[in-house]
Length: 98
Ligand code: FES
Image (cartoon, rainbow, N blue to C red):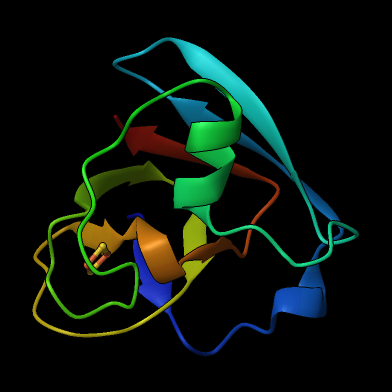
């Protein structure tokens, strides 16, 4: 089951394929990018326009469903969802319902 976790460290992987399923867009996330890009920033870089508000994991407006893989990010009461403004891939493949 996909999940978010704080048990992973962002240095666990160097690169990940991020598939945005509704948009049918796949983008590459790289740990080498400085500053390191959140999944929200990866989506924007790929030309998508996800909803967002605070970009600080406070408002919840960027919450989307994680369909596959795991991410490093804030834990909280987001059933099946993740806050992509502060989430980073923890597995080499992830799928996001976006
Ligand atoms: S943009 Fe507010 S929680 Fe992500």
